[in-house]
Image (cartoon, rainbow, N blue to C red; front, top):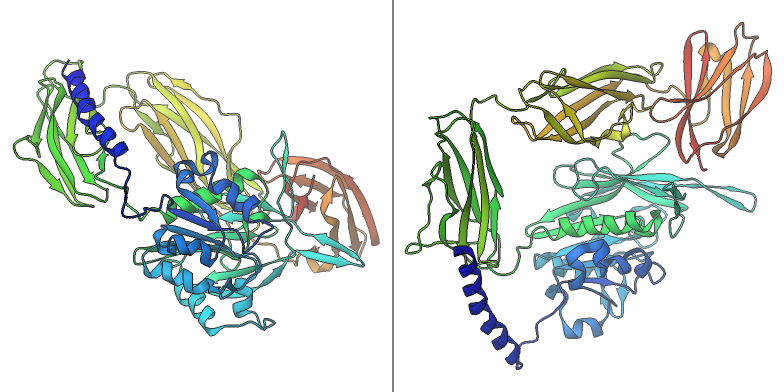
Length: 613
């Protein structure tokens, strides 16, 4: 009844305010209804299809879309509102240099204007980095070089080709752009370029193919964080093929790419990348008005023995543009087992918080009846909207270890150790145990972080999974060979109703300790006894293995094809005599990276293959 009355009186108070707002039609100051602007006249071919249509569509950019505007970079646009009236400006430059003059306005000047005002900037373009640094460029500018070097932390590497010209024909090379593992924008997500991506029901295509892409490295990874980089041949991490970077200067945030989103296959990859960029770029802007942030949103004491106590701290934080006034903290649904023992706010003594300040409230749980579940609800009354917020508080009386307890035979980290080129893969049996005295119910089990897709479950994993007390289930986890010699990491997340940890994480780690000792196309057996190459590579359905043997081979050579996860997809044996020869292999495959493995006298030699089908 108390809750209903409070809601009723809140509506009575708010309703007249809405009427008054509607009647006030005379405004002395024109307020900009838009917060974000994207300029569409730099790259007229792709500005809308690669950016604009997602920028203003809630299906792709969520609530940002209603405040987003697409307009020309012109005096007309800025005659109504200054560029700094926007919180974010997006510059899809296409083939223009960074210091281009458009409609009598200098692009770099406007970007600097935004940064000086503490606003946010996103830049994409195919040539602006090349213009500034490449020896072949005739449009070098010290001013632009300084901005790209000092403000964005770019150290130019080269214009990397992704094509081959044979006569009058251009052959495109497919490539992939992978998001940085530690970046909120990149998120280790792979984008397909110069090739279609087969979803299983349809094929997504890029809006444009790239003959070449500008690649660079960061001057300081801690200050200028990588966002995206190009993967070549294998799925290895690279530091010298970056195409995306981000930086912060004071309150301003900048994200920049040396290629356009038109190069990525599919609406979803393009739209979601734009959205993730906006989330990060606008993360420095507080919401309008007084806004309350509560952490945690739900207080769960778990099991606490009878006649014992446990305290949990609740943080109430002001994150809005205006001061937050906490008017009262009280029990909406009360239980004597719960008490506010610190930070309680009374109506006669409210707490005022400026942006970024917080107030702590301490809740204590003191159960009296064994095995009883206790529930209550804490009410927080403020000047934010909504004015009343509620936090559920729960606890169970009983022994500390009562209930389902999750554990694994590897603890919280699986170390696969080192694998060699000849191993291709290594499997471990991960046993998820229930060490408690009640049934454990798992509703989520997935490898959430996966460096270069090096880890996978080598079985079908379906949830929910129920594990009886003192029982376990086995999950086979595979670490697959990757050509790059380095350490690979992953992270398994298991969500369940476990008493000890609702979200249980298991780290994965493995190291590849050998690398290919060959160039892009040819692998040699010891003492150049045997040479081979695959042609064409990339291939469609079939390809030829062209080989040259300097002597008769005393044993059959086994040729196999493995996928990224170490699963054998094809196998054949071939007797090889001295001289040149070839072997045609018909291989119906899905798009992706494969490994051709030639085995002779117990040793394996590996060549990466790319399937375009």
